[in-house]
Image (tube, rainbow, N blue to C red; front, side):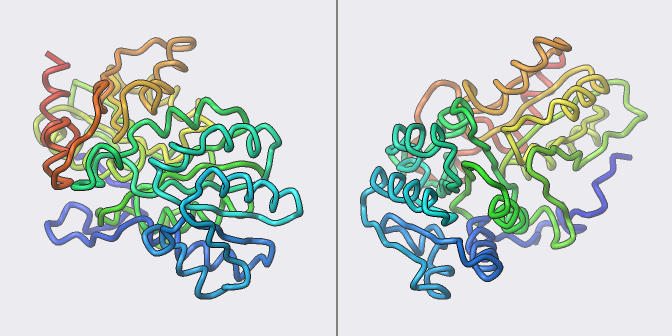
Length: 330
């Protein structure tokens, strides 16, 4: 039998599994971090409620700055505040930050090693009806190429809160990617989070001859876990490694995962180029070349639709993952 990690939601595979937007965890975590450290300040670009920055703003109005629709200015202001000893968190839709203000992030924040936390909400195609103009599916690539930048994509509401508290203590620039829609709660309040560490969330049935290792990041992890469960039931031993941190890259965990499986599969709600799949294959090509199937958006833009319809259309729901893995193994 395949085994789910003990610290995960025991009702994960039930039809009525609890679903909450992981951006809610950011709001809760930012408020708690603000209570612990008075140096923490928050900025928003006219999207205070949507990014859940309003939780902090209501608790600490004197430490909140509403910049308005000026994402480039927001990045520069945050860098200046960091230079004066503050710990700024600024949030917008990922399409606008880092999409619109990438040069300011690169030059005023990362180049200076500024202690600024960048929150990109409403990422991926699961933004849904807002359509291609608001679906950031290039942001991981944009941020992982920036020197000194940490890149994190929490899988659910609890991990988003833990990650927020962790990056508040970390000194240096960080990008954290969040989703819009309610997604299944995978972890619990007792689960752990450590910057730069991947964790095995599902262990394959060792009785199966075929061994497939699935690596996923962000809220799409749920689809990967469901797919792995189905694959194990169909006689394919599938394990799942969750990479909440894409940079710094957990080379030890990925190397060990590759050694234990014949085939790897990466799953991300992002362009296949430049994201998680690229990070995995770039590393393994140097130390342990491994046959790898990369699942993601294939060099195209998103479109309007219901989140579940879009995931299916772009081959990223659990049914599609199972289909593509079985096809790849033939």
